[in-house]
Image 1 (spheres, rainbow, N blue to C red):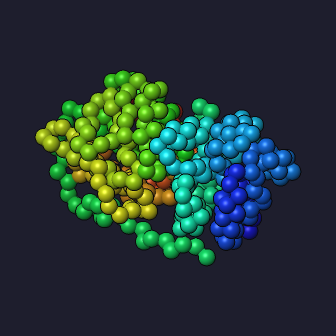
Image 2: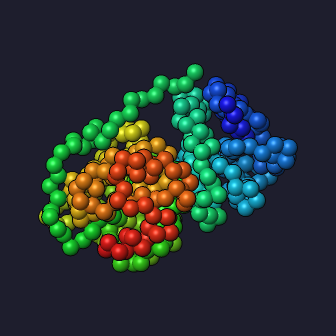
Image 3: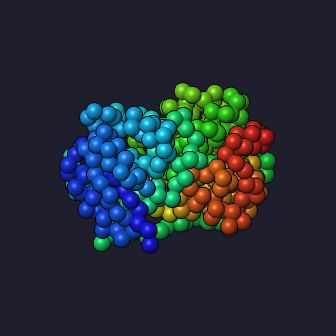
Length: 355
């Protein structure tokens, strides 16, 4: 079995040492090297190119974002950002995601070694997911820890008959995405006209990153994009992104739709979970909604999209050719949840068509 060759680029000797030890415990992973900054990394990469790069953002001689852009311009390679999670740094990390990073592993300023050890399962998972990512398809603006049981949407919302109105004047669009989704959402949302259906989105993303991500999209889109808050109205021309670390469900008061942001266990090992959002949309909006599942690792959202289709909603999955990781859409298609399969560039037109 061919191992995944990993290059770690971080100016912290502690991070390099701990990450090397943790990742090498997995028999599918080989650490080909660890560099203190991008210039040392480029020297190492001139001899052997890695399958995945684990990259810090703030480093001497060259910052991680500049290095990331250079890699993506010259030889696109899966990159996992491993950066300090702070309010101030969130926008910087969003810039990295926009430049082509596949995913984020967050690290605190204190208790770093303990954090990395406790999060070993997440780190290994992020690296393995990155190794499967086809970054050439990305749209550029540029012994393991115990695994928690995989819960379904039943942990948040009971299954059963919904109470959707037979028909409403406004459509709801529900979108679920994960790995590669930050770039995919940028393509879709920036292509929408100012007048379009209200949109609710779950993008698998760590806590505190979604606000910066939403703000960035809001600045480059015609529609309003923001991180959802409890009781926010879902109205035409507005997209609400579930906050990292919280589930989001659709509710209705009369003919008006709004969202509820709530805590709860991980569903499909995610919070927010696409399945939770899709189930709530199936129950609350029924055939007045449109469900879209896009690029991502795993199967979160596949069952929820099927529930939306069974409730009469048009459902769409992104095609393999334009996915960074054809995991979530593939599962949805396999389960008969997607009535239609479209490329990424066709999603905005589909949303407008149902408006």
